[in-house]
Length: 238
Ligand SMILES: NC(=O)C1=CN([C@@H]2O[C@H](COP(=O)(O)OP(=O)(O)OC[C@H]3O[C@@H](n4cnc5c(N)ncnc54)[C@H](O)[C@@H]3O)[C@@H](O)[C@H]2O)[C@@H](O)CC1
Ligand SMILES: [K+]
Image (tube, rainbow, N blue to C red; front, side):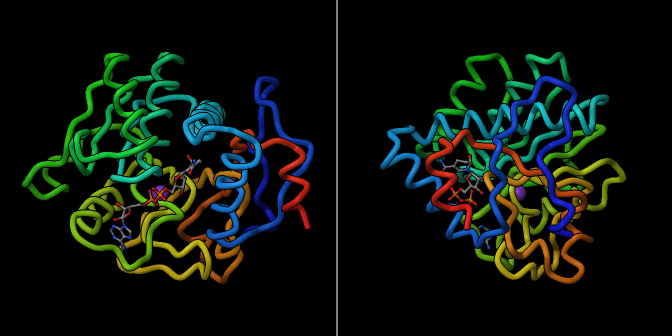
């Protein structure tokens, strides 16, 4: 439940903002991103890099062992996934990426992150025609970087297939920002919804996480800073 959402518990390394934001709608969190870019001159790629690095550091605490499969959607939630892959590789983890779309179909910050990831020598496998349950790479941990605040459940297209395959696998599951298939605003879950053991949510908890039974899909919620300046956080803290 959202009352239990906390900044990722850390050994000493992770710096945490002194101000913790209250639960918010997806639109309000997107306003934080927008204001950081427009009023504080922070390029979106900087916010995404902060999100990705913070999430990788949190993963290093909550799931320190084992190989990691990162599922990356077409939008910026997938961009976070690419960034995390690179930081986990730096930390010596075995990482595999399965993307919903080829890199030339990506845009903006997600495209930049995909290109950096490739240049870093991490292969980006792309989902083919075969059913996902037949071709999901094997790993100890599956990370859901499929869809975040830009998505409107219920899921369409191959996202259904991939989430079903991920849920069928008996490994640890970690969602980025929002478990794919859940509405961050209402906590409602479509069929299927990614069933996470942990959700690493960016900037602030989403209000839907407090709704009845949402925690069956979010698991434990950890808030990850995107590095928005304190002056900006203060504007959103009431
Ligand atoms: N600078 C930023 O904007 C930041 C964004 N961040 C990440 O970006 C996410 C939001 O990214 P986007 O706005 O690109 O959106 P998403 O990545 O959540 O989703 C966009 C994609 O979802 C598809 N889609 C929407 N509803 C769908 C459905 N029901 N079934 C299947 N596909 C569907 C759209 O066609 C589009 O391709 C956040 O949740 C967060 O993870 C973070 O990196 C922090 C910084
Ligand atoms: K997600």
